[in-house]
Length: 188
Image (cartoon, rainbow, N blue to C red):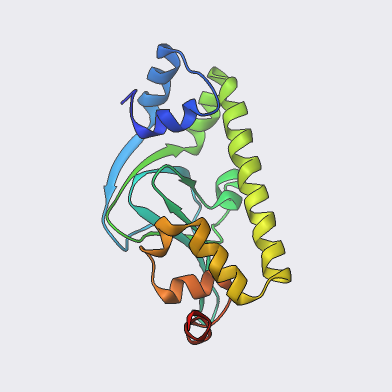
């Protein structure tokens, strides 16, 4: 496991000793999750942080009328969770669902807390990860209020080509905050 994708991901920001890798390996869970399975259910406490070894997921919120709004996607080599629920251990605002058969590492909330105490430099890794996620979401909000749907769609396709081929037009439309019909007219 020490040469797996998850350790290559961590290695981008911090160096780990063999012993530290072993400690992390001991608490990671690796699962093969079939397509269309929810790994986090809106309204239930999210107790895990996920790393996508292969496959893809989407995070979405369902309103009282059942309308889904896609908040984010995650593909190979990305981390994903319902951050609000995971950090606060309160009911999830999002559901996380696999878009295809996926292989996921998961890290339990309590195990992560113990690892952060045992391996202080992991705090640096997760700080960098969370900072980048915050910046990405801030830019997404700015795009939503300052760019046309055409521009947002073009940027999405250019920035995330690996996602575009794995999701439906309806899911892209909900991510962009438009109807599938409007997105169809934009694409023409």
